[in-house]
Image (tube, rainbow, N blue to C red):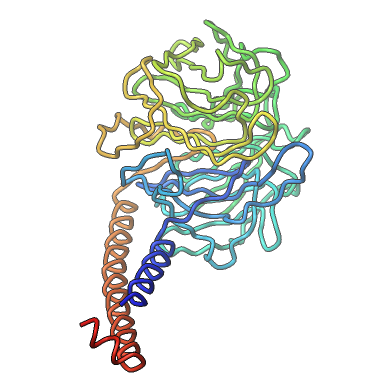
Length: 415
């Protein structure tokens, strides 16, 4: 009986390790896209600091299920799902990622640093779990040298600006025809990379990483008539920063800017821009918490009344696995929390809430796909559980039979 007990302990330990959720590797320079109840993370680099060479993160595609409650105290227990086994998956970093803007079931990965087998444009279909390289048509030949720029999707059209010094123009991908169009600018904005972009109605507002010491003047691009304009801001005008992230909280008419490198301080790690008055302010956060100042090349994603800040590089250049949650349910009374609750009332959403480094979309078609996938996952889990129970029972029976045959007298004495 002692042998049986030892066997049971070993089996249970191994079974626990088997079902234990996968834990993402440390990274920065990745992307995050919210699709229904999943945040899809792609790409990124792993680095131990400025003196160390960065390498592609080993897990290039995975998602976080935000339909479930979880605590960020131990990220290994969060509901992650690894998709690294998807065929033809290529290594990427410093790329842009957007939904297709039509069915909102596919994620388009564009530009950046691309590993073997990858392309300037790759597409992941979340419904079929297929990663592919479509045949796109373009009117420009400088594709591969672009990196560190976000994309904005509007009505099936994906917009990117610059991405390399000297490329002061906008390119647009029509996701229906897979055709690229190049727009020559009438006004050259003072930045080419490492900024954020937010869709406001039919215009894109670009923030950060300009040539000025402050962010008093911002550039706005109209997707209707291909015209650039300068937005003069007021209020507590912040110093320039790069490699930050942003979310647009539509019900508050507010863009939140998170962390970043260059000229950031503790008091200005998070700043807010009112999109009606274009006035800067420092939002009120009722408690301490969050990342250390200087976090950069991370992502921030608005999920209901939470902003989820993920991964990135510390101020010394080393990669992090940090996950942080900011509760933004009450305007200018935000707070850091450690528990995500999907049943928290969701703020009113807007189709204009696409933001840099994180995209969101929701429609009946993609909701149906998500429901089908969820039902499939439940059925698979039940079948897997039954199979595991049968296997466990069979092993126990065989173990008892073996012990009885080898030690008959001891078994009889024990019984």
